[in-house]
Length: 487
Ligand SMILES: *Cc1c(COP(=O)(O)O)cnc(C)c1O
Image 1 (cartoon, rainbow, N blue to C red):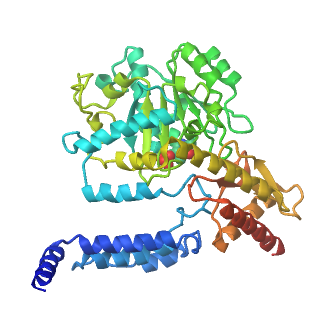
Image 2 (cartoon, rainbow, N blue to C red; image 1 turned 120 degrees about the horizontal axis):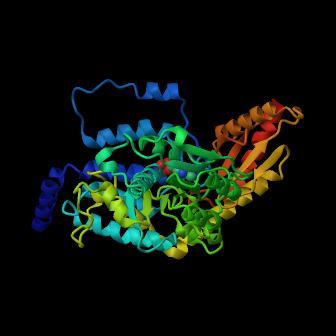
Image 3 (cartoon, rainbow, N blue to C red; image 1 turned 45 degrees about the vertical axis):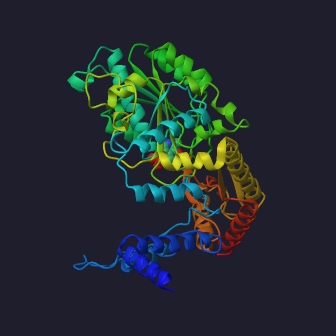
């Protein structure tokens, strides 16, 4: 009795003085409640912009409040404005939902609160990136000697790779861009396709390249570069230092450029070849799809995402570079040193940031949770479900399949039965059907424009999607078409 009393006293003194317990317990119970409700809640956000603005209409607080109450209020206000991309029926953009181990590792990453810019700040956080980086190269079938960087997403991975490419090409041309900058620098040409992702253009802009140095070649019906167009461009000008930017996974069709033809051609002209493979690079994890990446391992740099197909929480992207010395030289701030001390890796020498989140833990956790066979299965499952939705919906009246999935992306268009050849009416009908699907709460899609036509992207990128989700989604598409046709 006495002992019990003392224990209680001990607990209440210790526990009540720890300011983290209540907010973390609150976050845990609200978080698990959110995850448990995914299958029964509408997939799209429930409130409009105006409604959310009025919900969030607080003035700057003068007095504080207990942390757990902040968490409770935050949760209550945020939930109605969240799209449930964790759900198995979310098919917009290329957004999946995180795996259990990754969410838990992310929570711990926050609890540990490490600054992963320097090894000395957080030894384990540096070590885990070394291990996870090496695992990623194995999964993605990239050269083992390639260097890597954990960045916030594929936008920054593209930026990181293209920054190294730029400096490398200037170096080859005898121009020291680190000393002279751009003034008087030799011209660099950039060859890319008209279906490159907009983050490529943005990365190039941030790197000081204007649009006039970009040679944007027309792509084929799936959004791939024509090898002959690339060859002709090199024949037209075979002296200007060049970057060739290729794509693994066009966002509408999932198409892959012809790496095994274009890369040797580009290398014969001393060009740097970069591959934007935000999600498509993950095809390498499956023997069924790896042929799409034939020759890709010979590129000079590769960018991909963790937060898309690997399903780790945001922010997570990876850059890989076949020229580690050029990579290090671009980002190190110990100018003049081309080698680290040979032991520990300081992440700031490989990324554009200094202080940064310890991004390795979530990636490590997912790879451990799934193993390479689990990742192979994730990739194949998403591809199978994307095909099932596109083909299943394709059987419904008024549906036109614009692109069958090559991997996990396909596109549908909805045709207004009374519009004949008027494409603008089909555009409008397509938008209305997508809005009706989203309003039903059963599934969530986004419209896009492909080769001048409005369409609905079917992007299956999350681990939770299963056969039942596919069935519910096709039914919801069918109902939305009926609804809109009746109007
Ligand atoms: C999503 C995407 C990007 C940008 O990635 P973020 O993670 O959003 O920065 C770049 N390229 C392609 C092909 C993409 O699909």
